[in-house]
Image (cartoon, rainbow, N blue to C red):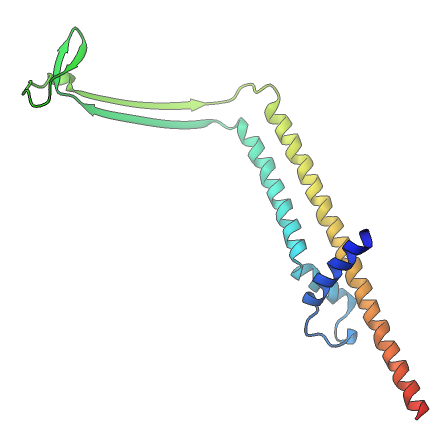
Length: 175
């Protein structure tokens, strides 16, 4: 099963990376590997997963940070006040304003700091760290697999060119 996946990977990746190259002599093995690493969408996706896992660690640690919130409201009333309670008048009845108590303003500012989360924030950070390690390992494994595939394809191309040369010499001798 693994060789089927590897063959499918090579069929998809290698031709797209090595387009325009007519022989192995035009490109060294190191250049081939470097080009494959730079142009492989799978390597780009694996690198993005590593970055996302690193951001997840920072996000998990954000639970320790303080938060600041602010809200406000403003209201203007007309009607009657009876025993400290506002009784609105009927619409259009012409009631007098209630004086200095006809305006209501409120501002609320709140600063919160987590003092104890029962270990939940630390556990979340450890989980994110494990995800980061897995993403790093996946990137390294993908890199090795891509290098192996490119190396195999490169040497198979070199061997095919040599076989072609030998066959050409054989045909020339036969003539």
